[in-house]
Image 1: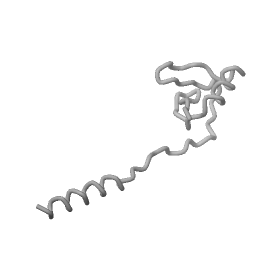
Image 2: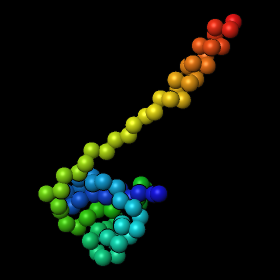
Image 3: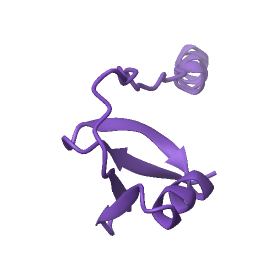
Image 4: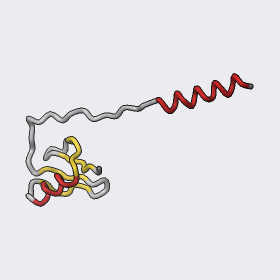
Length: 78
C-alpha cells in the first residue's frame, strides 16, 4: 500500500495518506502537487487545530539475535 506525503498550507508535515485519498483531494481542488519525487501534495487550507501525530518505526532484532546465537554455537564447536 503506497502512501502519499502531505503538507498543510504552512508546509508542516501531516500523516501520509493513501493514493485514493490524495487523488480525491487533488480532484476536489483542496490540494495541489508540491513535489513529484517523492510525491507530495500540499493542502490549500491551513488546519491549525489539527495536531500531527508523531510517526516512527520499530525495529525487531529477532533476526539479529538468531544470527548471534548461531555464531556463538559455531564458535563453541571449534
